[in-house]
Amino acid sequence: MEVKSFLGRSFFNELENAIGQYILYRDILVEKQLDFELYLAVSQGTYKSSFQRKLTQMTIRRNQVNLLIFSPEQEVIERWIS
Image (cartoon, rainbow, N blue to C red; front, side, top):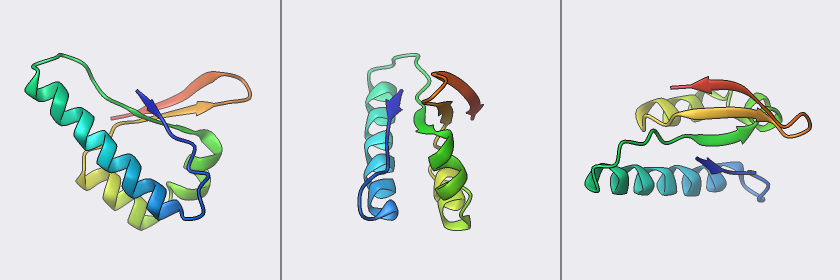
């Protein structure tokens, strides 16, 4: 699991970096034949404010990114999206 805050000046620049890192980690897991499922963890607030955009949803879907949505205040997982 990789937790990202998306607090930079540009959400899409942060998303580009996060997805690139996610793909790199996923490829390493496949190459090493490790049986782990990878998730990109984002806060519930970030998910609601930025991950509902059509372009973001398309990017997540096309790159087959699994998401874990969490509440930083309550320190609980809200949703798993595969």
